[in-house]
Amino acid sequence: MLLTTGNYYVFLIAIFFAYSLISRKYSWRVAFLALASYFFYAQSGLIPVLMLWIVSTIDFFTTQQMVKTTEQSKRKLLLATSLVIDIGTLCVFKYANFFLESTSSGLSFLGLTLQLPHLNLIVPMGISFFIFQSVALTVDVYRKDVEPAKGYLEHLAYIAFFPTLIAGPILRARQFLPQLREKVTLTSELGGQALFLIIFGLLKKIAIADYLATNFVDRVFDFPERFSAFEVLMAVYGYALQIYADFSGYSDIAIGSALLLGFTLPANFNLPYRSSDLAEFWRRWHISLSTWLRDYVFFTIAGARARSTSLLYIGLLVTMLIGGLWHGATWTFVFWGLLHGVGLVIVRAFEVLRKKYTFLPTSKSTWWRVASVIITFHFVCFTWIFFKAESLSQALAVLRQLTSLSFDCSNLAWPVAVMIFLGLASQWLPEKLWEKAEKAFVILPAPAQALVIFLVATGLYFVASSDVVPFIYAQF
Image (cartoon, rainbow, N blue to C red; front, top):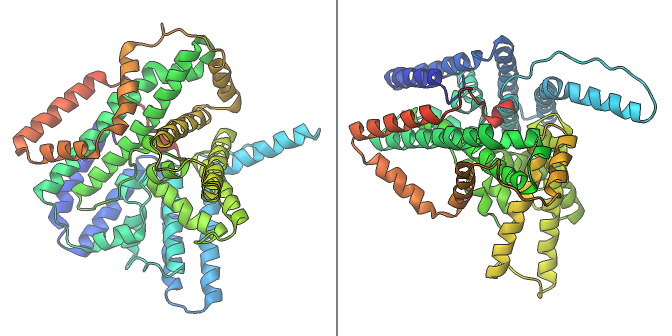
């Protein structure tokens, strides 16, 4: 059930009214939210639901036992058991064939022939998100940073919370569970904010991301040799806007849907293309994943203070390699993660050199700030080529066409060019402008809000692609 389809909004409206009726009683609303979330996920098939339930159930009992014992060896055993099951499940369903195929290719390169089986496994939608969310809870309980769920249904409702289940944001227990235990209070202002976020998310997804994908970007990446270097470059810029609009649009819809039920979730994006270095980019892009990788991978390797320079660099590389693999079981994602890891190492090394050599430019310098933003944006765009490409050979074909230095724009429609320019330029609009737009919608009377929603829905109906375009991050 995609968040851009009419079925989802019929489901959301029904859940909203039913949840409002039973929300005063804690046990009822927890049970209802768990059932509603499992019904939502059941639309993707029986096996995904069973996997979600099994992982959630094992981690529930694991975390419950952790708080009942003070014996450290037992706590470590419980943690190890949970991690092996969670990460093992993710590896089997998402990475087994990748490892088997890579092993077979590696042996063939060495002159050895070994036919390894191909497993007919269907990767459950959003598996990376609910696995990472479950891992976070288990590790946090082990570290005594958070208390586990009070009951089984509360645990199920947290892991399977339907607005964020398919593509995040990745929730932390400390963010969600206290709100689940509080009495639901939805004011007209919060309701207006929720509707604004959903409308804005739909505009990003359908009017920008899907339009760019179907009318330009996909065609260029599929057959880069048919386009000029300038058109390929514009497609790369277009994909940078497309993936931002697609994923931040999903996050807006998810956060808005949660807000309708009384849950305030943290932002997942913060104008990432205005970043002046790669570290800042990852503080602004997919914030829930970048903080997850920082807290549970990087700190595990390098430590919270990262006193060792070598451990710091190794931690950055390993963290981003895992981040790349998290996105998908292909060498393009591995290479994408490696590029970001190397980029973060270079940024960190430059910061060390800048403290040592005073003649190097500082962030206070205006020209350096502008140059840094331009360099960072183009490095991110360069890495997006590998993220978007279905294979390394396709990525190299795009890069090869870029280096042809040919100029022709006959295949670039002016609406596409204008959208790319305005979409990227909007990253530099004052943040207060968005706040004023939201406030203006919120203070409108209900009939006026309904009229705005109707006009937006009508417009989206006419610009929408004839085929439903899935969210990019739903595949992860």
